[in-house]
Image 1 (cartoon, rainbow, N blue to C red):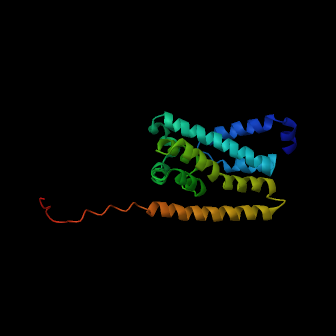
Image 2 (cartoon, rainbow, N blue to C red):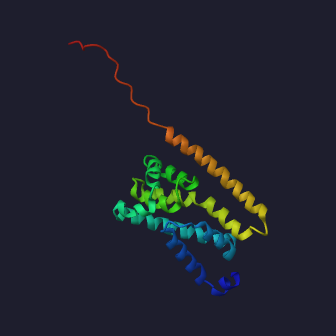
Image 3 (cartoon, rainbow, N blue to C red):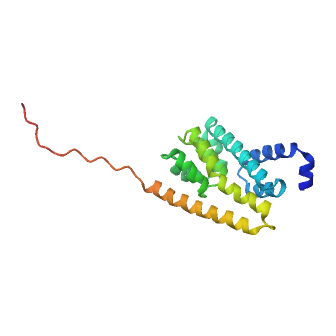
Length: 194
């Protein structure tokens, strides 16, 4: 397969990115494609291609969600809608980043629900760009090095677990951080006429 990809030249990465981005619009597992990218293109190019394709698909899904009636996407977001909206509602960029690092919901559901939420496009793009990178690195590393350099995969996986745990702790803090209600004004008694 690697020989065929090499023989196809520049066409192979273009076809892969287009296919991956299209699959990102559907609620199907995409991690196997990330592993395949590592096996077919190698670690560095595979990571870049998967990241680019995932970003294109995420931005497209976000735009679709902004353009259509939310009810039309219920078959995609399903039971994840309320949970993701609860995370995204008040914290913008930090919420998107956490939703990407912690498995709050599947990748596709987060894309569409983000488009339904008040999250700004800039925050969604930046949070997604940074948040998907660790997982992308791990899955591509599995495809590129899984059999030949398992230590690399273990190291990448350990880093992902640590990042996910940290993001999970941050998510719990965001959920529990409620604004402190303003204290009622002190009762000073009836005002005196000057």
